[in-house]
Image 1 (cartoon, helix red, strand yellow):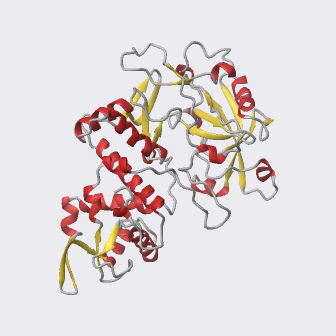
Image 2 (tube, rainbow, N blue to C red; image 1 turned 90 degrees about the horizontal axis):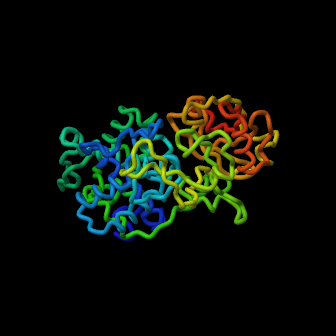
Image 3 (cartoon, rainbow, N blue to C red; image 1 turned 135 degrees about the vertical axis):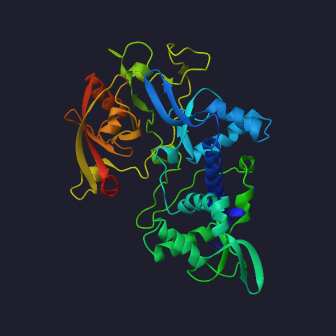
Length: 416
């Protein structure tokens, strides 16, 4: 299955890399469903000192579980598979500070914290897997997936194209029958579904379709046959953009410093926050404690400084942000630190942007979002500043910061 032939698209509609990437997303959703279904829970809210991380799992626990339940015998292979899923943005470290490790570190599925960017290229795989799992359940399969006859031949576990359109409209997953047909075509071209005789594209007609049989045989070890990298996707309406799955170094010039500056929440840092310098802040990354550590011990210091992928779909320039015709909307907010801190991470240089927002922190409560650019801090224009300078401004005031942020009007409309 190294070329993802089970998810091949109709001739000429996708490259092998796109097919393989789609398969990785499907396997990722398969794993998410597995972990959410476990008792005792593997995905749950977890506390570290004064901070609660919602719906997360521990790297080491998942490796142990997969070794025992999936028949895997090599921990390094499990890490390899999980790393592939993380690189394709199936899940991420809760503060985006670490690649996947067989350690007591917290990770979260992107669908669980709404940081997964749904695009036309990946939507069929995510929605297709959801439809397959929902409609294949015993109760639903009896009423929806039935034996159907086409050209005097009987086929099992089938549905008519018009029935799928009816279902999608009734459940509110699309706004019209035309949108349902478009989604059905995407599902077929992604080989989530297929016509039983492979003679028709998806149509709102009395034609018989099935979910592709490969969906019933998915297993995590299939990922060992892949050697793919996140792919570059062109925008249909403008110049090429980098998808959310693209490695961070493609979003920056070769000479740009892409170190992450984390705006700390106090209990996450060893020692006192007062007087903490930027140099000290950038000299380490914080892990969750090893299981042998007590809840009062300091977090261990990690030497892993590899930057996680950027959340930007495309890097905007300062000139673009400052233009009178800029599509970016300005908004000012004042954030008051709680006992743990502000709860967000700044990244990039001239301009800086929001890389991560703790969904339980004060920044999220005020409406701060990822991919927003930082225009000013406490009244100081910072579009042309480095992330070190922006962090200095934020840290100048211990308990409160006023930010002017810039959001693309498309993203702004999604949050209103």
